[in-house]
Length: 267
Picture 1 (spheres, rainbow, N blue to C red):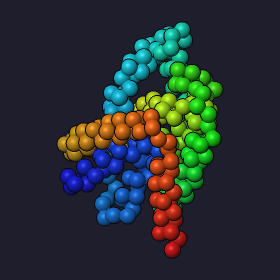
Picture 2 (cartoon, rainbow, N blue to C red; picture 1 turned 180 degrees about the horizontal axis):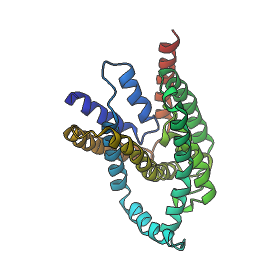
Picture 3 (tube, helix red, strand yellow; picture 1 turned 60 degrees about the vertical axis):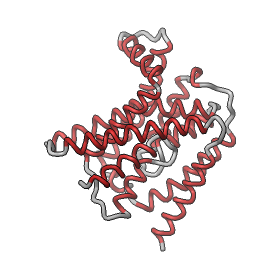
C-alpha cells in the first residue's frame, strides 16, 4: 500500500473517530469515491489501536479509575466510583456487541456500506444532533452518570454500526437529551469508545488471524502511529472548542456532506 494512502487513512480515522461526523463513513467514502483499494482488516485494526491509545492517554485519570474499578467489579463489588463507572461502561457496550454480531451473522453489515446510506445517516443524525444539542438541558455532569442513562446511550451507540451515523455523534446526542453538559456529553461518549473500540478490534483480530497476514507489520505500525497523533489532536481541539461553542459547526458539515452524497447518488 502506498505511504500516501496509509497516512490519509490514518488521518481520516484519527481526526473523525471522536468528532461527531462518522469515521467509518469517511473511510468508506475514500474507497468508494477514489481509486484506492479497500485498506483491509490489518489496517482497520491498526487505526483502531491508534485511536484507542489516544483516548486512553487523553482520559488517563478516568482510565486508571476504570481499571481499578474493573477489578472490584469482577469480585462482585460496586463500592467505588471506579467500579460503578466500569459497570456503566459494561452495560453501555452490550447493545453494540449484540447488534454487531447480528449484522455480521446476517450479512447486513455489507449491505449498509453504501454512499446512499451514508448520505441519509449523515443528514438525519446530523439534524438529530442539532435538535438534541439545542433542546437538551445542561444540568448533569459525567460524575452523575446513571445505569439507566448508560443503558439508553448504549442502545443509541449500537445504531452507529450503520455507517455515517457516528458513534460519538449519536452517543453525544443521547447524552444531551438526557441533560448532560456539552463537554461532559463528549467525555462520556469518549469513555464509551474505549470498550467499543476494543471489542471491534478483537473481532477484527480474529478475522485477521484466519487470513494469516504477517506481511504488513510495517504498514500496521505506521498507520497506528499516525492515527494516534491525529486522534489526540482532534480530541484536544474538540474538548477545548466545546467550552465556547456548540455542536452546530459539525451539524452544518454533516448536512452539507449528506445532501451532496444524496445528490451524487440519485442524480
